[in-house]
Length: 265
Image (cartoon, rainbow, N blue to C red):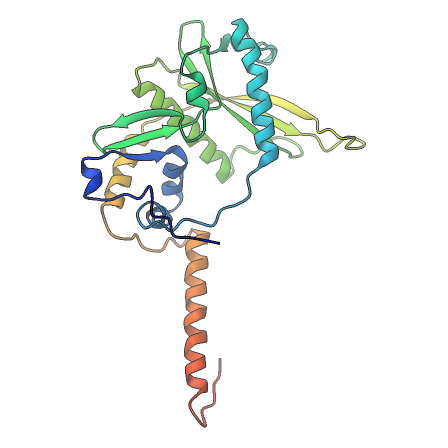
């Protein structure tokens, strides 16, 4: 059953003094559709939820355990060596907190009065002490991974937000981050109770220059009125189409009660 949320809503009066927490995923939602974002964070009307990608979560958890072995030893993972990455998994007192969902890296952005958060998958440290943000991804595609799709653009923004958060906490952060991609193989003869992956590392040079202006756009949005329908948003179009249909249906019921009236719909 769906309920309108009453907690974690932005209040233009209260949140002038009390900081408002905003996660990396909610920032991404704003980039996709300001109207849906406003309905969620201001009015408590969220988009319908989807089942969790539990297989992806399993891959994520196992990769973290695997890299933690080399983190504890202070050595380079063989996959990093294979790709010529001169670094080691970061050992830091905050690492577990930075990786925990709904906690993550947290930074208070004074101009907006937002506490911005994001849970990172991993962080590596190069020989010069620079931190390198790492994100684990799991998929199953034939051939090469397509980096031009809309989802891949979102992945890039995700990594850049983590870089921005760490920089604002005073850490030296490399522009170059990495995606550790586990691609499930479908060319095996049988399942045999196990799924095998090809694991690759893709470098990405990020830029966080877009983040600060976007945060202020979000602030302005939350303090204003409901944004217009986004014609590129499937949720907006669905709600619009459904509402129009319901209006037609309602009018038809009323007109059918009028004697000797012929309807052409």
